Image 1 (tube, rainbow, N blue to C red):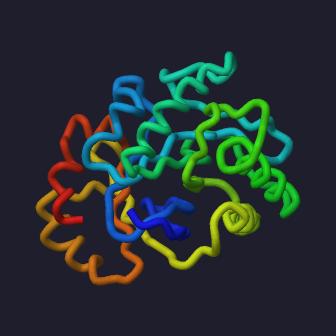
Image 2 (image 1 turned 90 degrees about the vertical axis):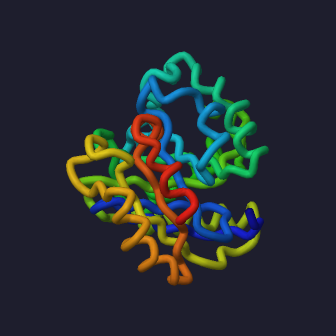
Length: 240
């Protein structure tokens, strides 16, 4: 993986997903964290994935106390999710980018103003990225970026949040040099209400049509649990 930083804009059906990551070519990104039967984060990293999005931080903004929710993996109310820190660092040691996904389909989140967006950006920087906090929910590990999985809410002020995050990223690395677009797909028909593409259609029709684009980032799959059931990523890995 190259070391330069990029902003990755991912389109997942009608969902806005913006990821601040480092990348140089197409790869496979996976969501992890919303099914207790998908294995640990450390078990997720050896294999087909170049990026892992920890899902989700579903509560934030407009005066809410930010709260992470990783389903059955850990209890955030007792600080139990900081046990994931070694797994994050293990993944990163293998060259895999690990990000926090904020939002989701059932969360309680919104941004009331540009100032609210700045406050959320500061919280994300200090608690998950390169800043400092005495109560980092995932422990001391420094994540590689933030994935915006914004579904069914007002589109106001999300650009403000991304732009302050971008300023914070510049403090940590250099400047953001490129934009990558990931094709977001369910890894199984039952993983989403629509949008599933059979492997043969994806590899013979869809991927050849988009791979020539300079901003092709690869494929993002929902989710680790469903990919375990179908082996979708293994079927497409050599074509991405």
